[in-house]
Image 1 (spheres, one colour):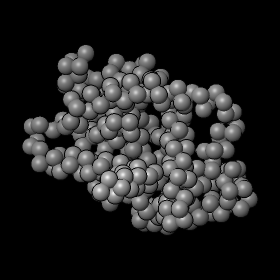
Image 2: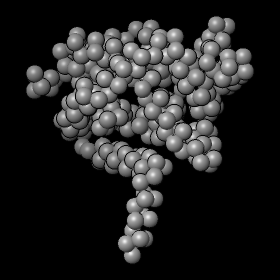
Image 3: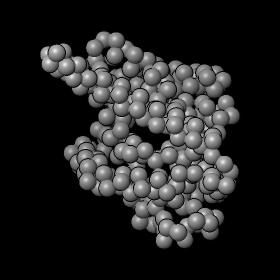
Image 4: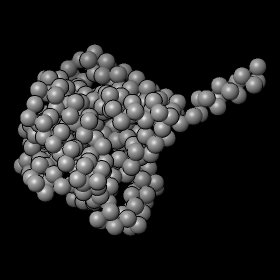
Length: 280
């Protein structure tokens, strides 16, 4: 009996099962949040507008607590790792890593372009991936960008938005960070349908896929760390500023605009937030 239990525990603690369990538990939590939001009566829903972007944050009290927890984790673990990555890896090498990761994301972007009915965008993805994979040595060099064929981020959260599905409640998940129920659902669907994931999981390369996921996370955090630190230092309410910036960025991406040049202000107008005094 004890031998069987040991085998079960060993199997559960494999990399694949840990990843699957975490993903399923998080997806279940998000589903419960979304169902709760649907059943919430209007007076309990915190809805506001910042710079023309509607924000739905019915779980603000809980989100703020998780946000503070994440800040502690970032300060203690994530930011030192990211700073170490930036210190030890030169800028040019980090750019090459980003190029490869973007190129590897091409199949998912292509699928979402098709699902959004953007045939021209899907064709652009194919051209970029072909040029960068063959001539750019697997995407190390972004030669397509030199020819004016720029990378365009697309994910299933944006696809759901194109289909007319609202964000749903704003959620701050431990470690992973802030997003909306719609975009979290889109993230997990993208992960599930990713052809590279299917290939690696079917060829006993699960650890390699987890390593790739970790590289994407570090690359993303490296691109955001200075922006977030500046936002924290310049904002009255860092939580509200981050929330506003998130919604504004997603609004720009939904209409295929560069968030850096979309004209949205990073810092929200706190006069619009009736409950701000509660958090001073």
